[in-house]
Length: 385
Image (cartoon, rainbow, N blue to C red; front, side, top):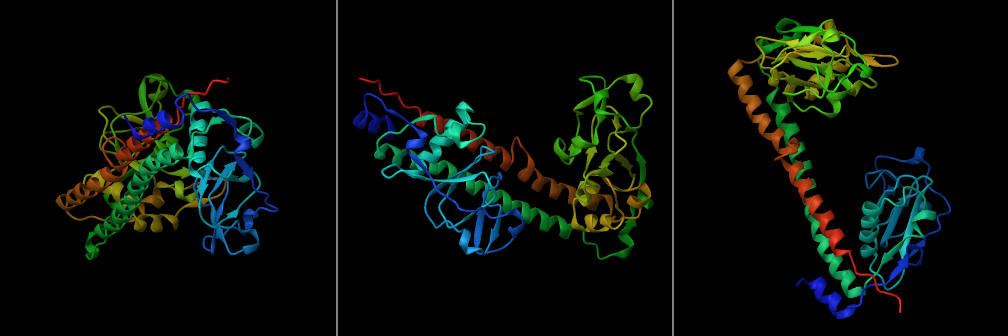
């Protein structure tokens, strides 16, 4: 029998009574929220608002500071819940700050509200809805034991997230160093070593659940890594016959987007079938450059800095095939290229593989945490006399 079960039998064998959220949370009165135009990248005090990330910015404006305590911050328009145990500045309207009633473990209330948030989806917006919901608050001894268990899970996830961030930085540094060439003869303009062509237009209404495989440029941001063997979209064969294709081993690169940073995202097509490419994409084919080597290079600062010089900006950002062709890439021997690919693929698998890498382990731990949080906070309700 677990410690929590033992404590439940000792302190509340008949069950746990329910209370309204409004009776255990006291809303802190904030006379003013820091306007967004005063957010800075650095400063003395972190800014907490409704954004998904914990800290939205920094400021030195002491008059806005909420002193260090253990607070729960609720986004009245975003459903975000944050646990804050340091001095901070509330930002933007709709950011509500709460202090937990005396005699109740504040972190327990935070975990309880998170669990309620996941299970009921009952408060999409507004404190007026949240405050009327009921939660079960067991004796303090049980609260503290549950917090200790759940903190173990969240700390493990933090450690894994920190490791992932460290590995990403290590990967970036290593990748940049591998593409530094001390031999000017190795530097080649892409137009010297590759053929570049533009896809042809199709629209989202053309996309089917089956048919001829196709790549829409918007998918490259969200659905593809460094390479792919299967498409997510398909076209009618008659339409597809009028469009342009990439073959296995071709690099597919985004050539237009809403921002400069959208340009240049790429992957290698390794599917068995030729694939249609959208007109906001270029196909790139080379007999002297390994395609995975090219894609790894397209993720470097070297490539990005060269690319920015040639991008046109108006309503959308774009680059022509001729301008892509002017970008220089180091071209060592194919054997050396493949050595670099092999080394970088190991890093990429560690930081990006959602089945076996760190992201997979983080997701597993997160699911375990949510499962046990639900189980630990599932109390038998005390029946009214």
